Image (cartoon, rainbow, N blue to C red; front, top):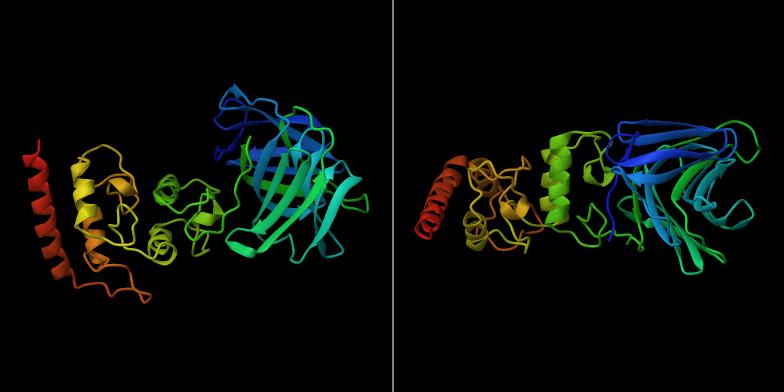
Length: 339
């Protein structure tokens, strides 16, 4: 349905950010784009990974934003948009076309000083603007505007100066997603890729980002909000978001013999072949090996049923290693006999 895209210079992977109109300047670096302009400056997204992005009447466009000043808008090149601005310390969200054909709602929190999510949806005869703090369902603000004459266009974004007509409009887009279908807004615990379900894809994407250590990463991955993506965030996803144990390969809420049987029968143990959570990679390094098994048993959930509200006590290392040896040995024997 949709993809998580990065923003890139021409010749690199990701979107080509192309100047469209206005006096603004843009800096594309480290997978993000920072804009500034004294009047409306606009940039479009005509290519992705070297291929042309099709023109469409209907777009869903989401961005993780850092707002600084002036106006910020995302939408289409006709200025159909979802936009935000602050005026005298009051924040606003708007939906519509241009500067006059818009609907406006006051936002009950500041736009500055934190990462926010802004989404533009243009489907049928309606433009909808959405704004929220990632992970905070109470922060979601939405507003609609009638959209009488949609045209086939590229997705676009831009900034302008403040309502007084002076100064600069300055904002940064950290990540963007575009889709030909409406993108769901999800606040499901553990659904860090916002696809409406918390599953192995979420922790696999967190693990891939942890291995790559590229900045910026999806802020939803940083579960302890320390601006570092590491194993602590994986632990929080498993224990606090999914309320399960390391080793729960099928994410049914329990770590049992069936999980081990499944991952060992997949044949990825101690090989150079990549693995995800469902294939036994429980430490996020991209492979299934003895380290993953040790982590799973040290988490203390093997054949204990569902995780209790109070985190389980980590077992003593000696008992864990004995159990690991017995289970891994028996499962490896089963796998070899079946070859």
